[in-house]
Image 1 (cartoon, rainbow, N blue to C red):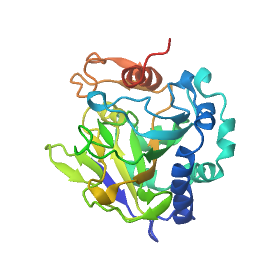
Image 2 (cartoon, helix red, strand yellow):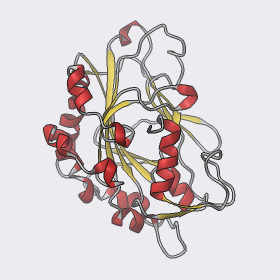
Image 3 (cartoon, helix red, strand yellow):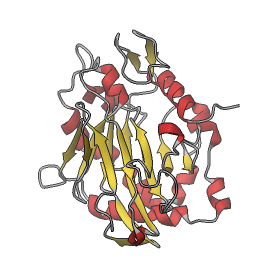
Image 4 (tube, one colour):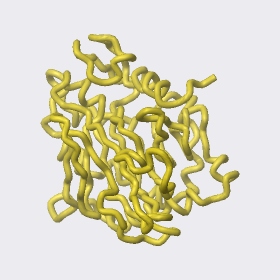
Length: 294
């Protein structure tokens, strides 16, 4: 399940267009900083869920995830006690400050009952665990094995939060925004009836995907959205990079998750009818996607 909400006169985030553009153009600048600067922004103790991460996450069939810089505002104190690095990136900070004001969350989640007497909206509104992630896709290497697959830029996966908000990505070459030279490149999702659909939406719109914990809390009524990203192909795609921003809206770290009898996601990790907090569930999923902490 995926949805697009238009940033129009009915649902408008003040300053969204300029904040989005300023933020996304920051991604290639950050990615091309000297390695020692990026090393200083890494946080291994959070399994690289804070600060800069490059090639640490493994998704479909061992494929690496995207490369990103992250703000996570809440979690185990050992993970998230120091966000001083965030002040170095004012455009990132300005954009993520929109989170409490974004009306789209209630538009998309209103009416989604996940407990008998409680909806997804109230669970997300009280959560302190939302996470912003600036995503950067390095230029694809042409002619390598798997380089022409649909998931060549990011492997198939589902998000472990409840609801993911996505900005429309930009394509650049040497930091300059360009039209994508390959119309097949971009974000793809798999529907419930196993159809593959390319996601297309406007620069000022926001797309939403259902995450794993919305599926869990709804007892399987909602289904997490499998998705991947395809890199552009062909000679004209040489040096083309992509940047976007994802806001992962997720339950509070201590929110209880009661798993249904039939579990469709991470079956090897979750026993039927299990009861875990969102924090416990997140740790299990992170162990799967990242190397376990020594």
